[in-house]
Image 1 (tube, rainbow, N blue to C red):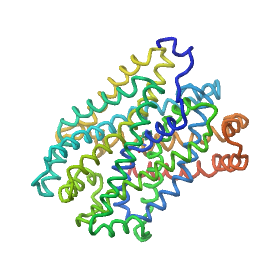
Image 2: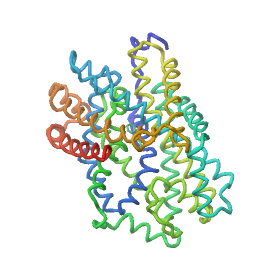
Image 3: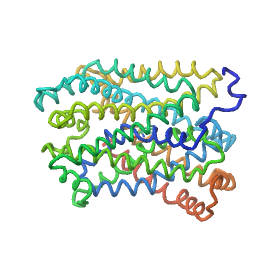
Image 4: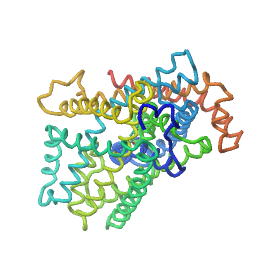
Length: 453
Ligand code: TRP
């Protein structure tokens, strides 16, 4: 295993379950368990969820399938796959954008991921005991605006390297096959605990009874933008994983399994959180602090709160870990294949760069920071520019690439390996060419306006 790795047989997933565990591991992340519940809370509950489900189906699924198709056809990293499918064109620029987005997302995402380690420790050591709600909020704000998150971020990154070390089959696949079932088990326990609390009904109703009066244009845009982020599409993560999928597999069926797993887990996260929040009479609309401020309050009052609290932060940690690994893989695959260095050297280089970016992101949250541009700190910029700009443009360009640039016969060939539905293929081509690009273009143009207004 060294420089010759590129001429030897390419590493790849060895089973269908392994592919689904790894790709669902990428999709299920902080987006599902930290962000989805709070944007549901801010946008009035279940009416928002309906719009989100529509966005997943109309835009998220087609782009996810597009990434798998391009990756498996290209059999290479995000940049080279485009070069192989459309030689001597500029389409590999999409791959480049993906690499840039990968660094940006890792920059802020690993910081929040690090919080999960700190909060796991705080919970198991019962550190919130006796605190008032205000003190719990102060604990979070003091922590997030100090330099302490940097330490946890570095620890988190080192743990993810442990998974990346063994490559695809003996690294990512091996670990996600254990971690993802573990995650499902934990979330099931948390849901059971939450919905059996006295007074849980109100929280369940909040999630299940649509109230369209709260639904604004902003909610629709949030739903569309979040469907991209949640499915990990628009920057080559799923493309890179797609390049490791064997030709025997049906990409369509894998795509639907992953979209379903991602959506179900987001909904279960809501079911683990809102019934408990309502049962203890706490406001569900607290935004990003929902998980780190509201929930410690809930666990403090809940019977068995230390155990369920610890399980919750473990869940968040696992979810973040398998997502961070997938974003890292985009960069590592690029460096190993293009710069012809071995995997471990590529991991080292990438890690150093990510630690530097994440450190600046964490520092931009401290009170005396000068890392504020145009009213947003660096941390927020990394989030906004990647989620509102790079992912939608990436997704849009990939759909155009698939619909208008890639040879129709190549596309049909990829779609029909492992499955035989011609009708499905035709429907997909229509969505690819017309529906998805228009929807993405609308979100994108509105998202950009919001960013610069
Ligand atoms: N989907 C993950 C989440 O929901 C985050 C993530 C992983 C991601 N890889 C990505 C987002 C690639 C965008 C692009 O938390």
